[in-house]
Structures are given as structure tokens and as C-alpha cells.
Length: 105
Image 1: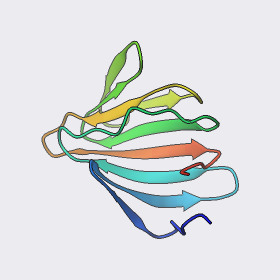
Image 2 (image 1 turned 180 degrees about the horizontal axis):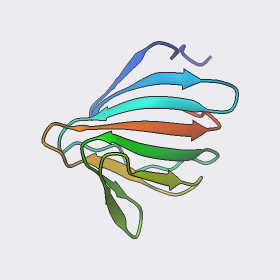
Image 3 (image 1 turned 135 degrees about the horizontal axis):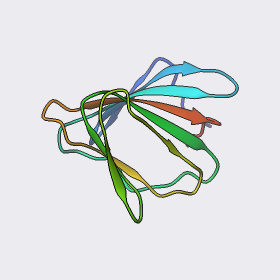
Image 4 (image 1 turned 120 degrees about the horizontal axis):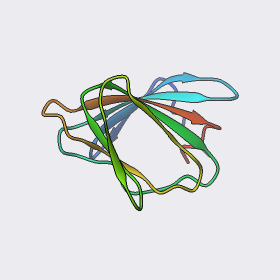
């Protein structure tokens, strides 16, 4: 059984994520990554993910390259593409993660 993540703050070693919006097609998460912290290097087998930097600067890394993104920059991450996101801002980085279909588990 999946845990109920509606209206909940999910604490992570790197910061937190919060489910901002969800319908049958998409889920939008508010992510905060602490300064110099990063998500794990991972991939999603079925979902496509869009990341929008809201505040701060993020380094998005893939197997063969990486990009630095600043406020209002975005990146599309297709299924089965390994990636990680790192905050390179002294005050941390805020992002919106748009996933379709939703697949946090």
C-alpha cells in the first residue's frame, strides 16, 4: 500500500519535497535542496520529469554532461535517463518538479 503523500512534507537528507498539485495526468512537487547538497544519481523507468528552477542555482548532471540552471530555467528529463540535481547556491535552491505520469514509488 502506498503511503498518503497528499499535503505532506517529505524530508530528505538533501532538503525536502512537498506535493503541490496532483491530478490524473501530472504531479507538481516543490523541492528545496540545501546548499551544496544533491539528490541521488537515479533514473525513472516510466515517467518524464520537468525541473524548473524557482530560486537559486542548480547543477543538473547526467551520465555524460551537466548543466547549470538559474532562476526560471528549465530542463526536461526523459524516462530512463540517469540524473541528479545539486544546489550550488549558498542559500539553497528551490525547484518545481513536474512529473508525468506520477511515480514517486
